[in-house]
Image 1 (tube, rainbow, N blue to C red):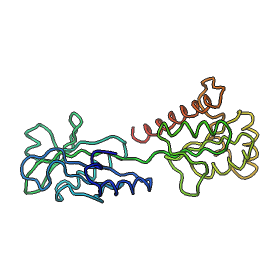
Image 2 (image 1 turned 90 degrees about the vertical axis):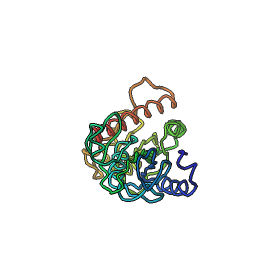
Image 3 (image 1 turned 30 degrees about the vertical axis):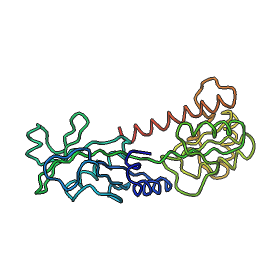
Image 4 (image 1 turned 180 degrees about the horizontal axis):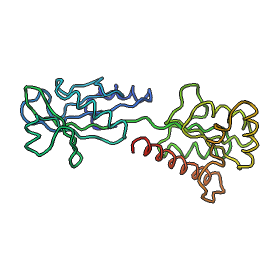
Length: 259
């Protein structure tokens, strides 16, 4: 729980609802003001995925545009943002222009008659990535136990909702419904699909998938065997090698998106 939630139970309730919905949002806190400003240090707000205020207050409309842009940047990059909204002549006195970022602070123009300066810290809160572990094998059990310690939301079945960059699937059925599990996983449009088993076994299954109408463009996306080549032997070691690959893929996709 963040300091913002501790100080405002209504804010905490609103944040908890958004967390339960597995949607991104952000906290905004005024950390400093100078001159005449409607809101004072300590004022807080909860921002939705599109950067609009859904709870709390940060003053009038003078900061709204800058806050929205910074919130979108924070949610896209996953990194906190610090913005300073000030009259243009005051920015010029500091040797900066609207849009400049200096030593971690992004500067924006305040065009309101109050001519105050407001510094706002924006903290993104992103949903945990979803890891679907299919199967009840020892590897599946080890992975389901280990993954939450690395901030994965673990489930055991592919749902019919959309896939996307936050959904990762590992098939650890190990002979118990392999083909059905692969068919279900490849229909989910997930960011990552991996199969626990030898490359030779997967090649046989891939041929059957293609006979069933799943093209090679799909089957080629499956990581088989699952995990990085760490020389893993035990179920726990194999689970660790899979988590290492999950992290590698996730970070690579984040860098590609935000680079």
